[in-house]
Image (cartoon, rainbow over all chains, first blue to last red; front, side):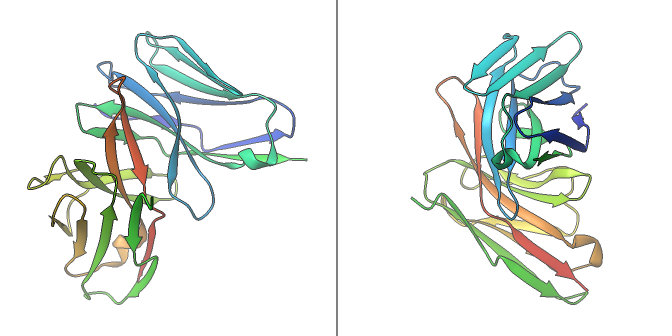
Length: 110
Length: 115
């Protein structure tokens, strides 16, 4: 099946870490992705992880993958106001398609 | 480098009217996609084109048609708009990274309201 689930909202204080969680169903997915959507804009790729890895770090972003539980998370360290956005988890389906979750709206409060 | 360009950005239609959303990419990508975004439902794939000359249905193709006019352009047509098609529509094109990951580049979106 193709079903990606994530919680819809997250509120975090500026300077704290944000953790966004996602579960997916297709065990054959080779890559898993995180996209960011700012208000009024399209989605932009933040990072991706190959399915045989369990962690990937890129500056303030850390992606953790638990393939056994089909669980993916994105941690943003030192969250800033510019990190307020909708974050989408996605899994690859075959060679051509990506299946997206509903998106997590992250609100950063002062 | 414009990336993916969609037109129009906003459109209001009456039920039963038809319209075409245009999309063009200048990155020489083979694959292009149309998604719709609805609150609480994320992005759902309407149609995609793996390469010039081919199109395939996604999750929610009913009520839509597409044309892959050439490598650059992929249009989405609503023949008889319905209120359920009120949504934000995103076009995307795909590049395969050296690692093998499929990287989508999205347009800014087209907000369509059907009254």
